[in-house]
Length: 322
Image 1 (spheres, rainbow, N blue to C red):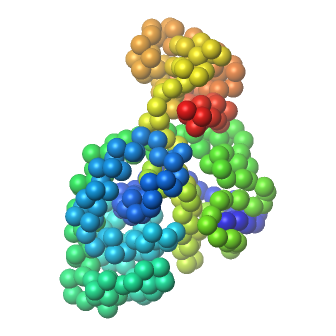
Image 2: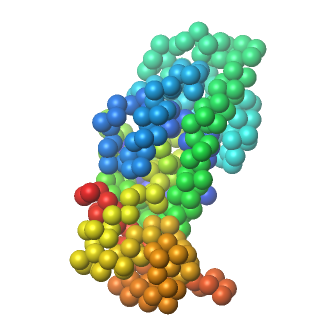
Image 3: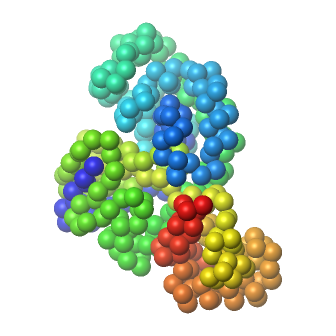
């Protein structure tokens, strides 16, 4: 997939605050419908969750499965990227224009045979949307709610990393470091995709949405608004194996400090996570900052340490190789 940017598009790139419950509900169900061999490098920490949920997916998701094919397509009315919490997302689904729902279901019919219930939804039959609301909520409650604090924490870490990258290197650095397998060759972003696809943004820019459960890229057009591009969130819950691979290079304690900064942290928090004194944590953070692996921002009486793109790349390479 090649996304082509104009100067106007580059001026209108925005970052979503983080993953949203309704969006993650849809993409997580899609993830579970794909073979377990797809995207193994992007499944860190989710293998046990996948095994647990996949076994009872129909009971958990109900009619939601009727809207999510195994192919790379999701109906737009099921995503609602502007929704904050789950209640808002469900309300937007309930009140989505009939034309939008019908269009999404027509495209869905290309990928899989319509179920009796989805035909009722297309016809706007009484009660059809209420069934969808019930099953979306049940799936989130049974399958995602217990993990949601981790999803939110990863979203915070991702936003901090992207914001820091944008401040230090501008839009070019932001697009060049979104996902290791994606390639930014101005003015085009190249993304691995099952089929060739050229995307023009029409001068309305791009809304970048981090997604915890997504395996690749998800593009969503919005009439009259910026296009939405979802990408795999910067994951702060990857195994902290940096002390094994990077220990000989940085020293085990310093490598551990780098590893715990997958989630931005104050000096006190770093000390608690690694199990060293605050003075020692500060010293190690200073050395890492001098090497360009960490940046530090003062917040009142405390400082916040954040991985730079170089530090994130060093840790990503370690985690991928492992």
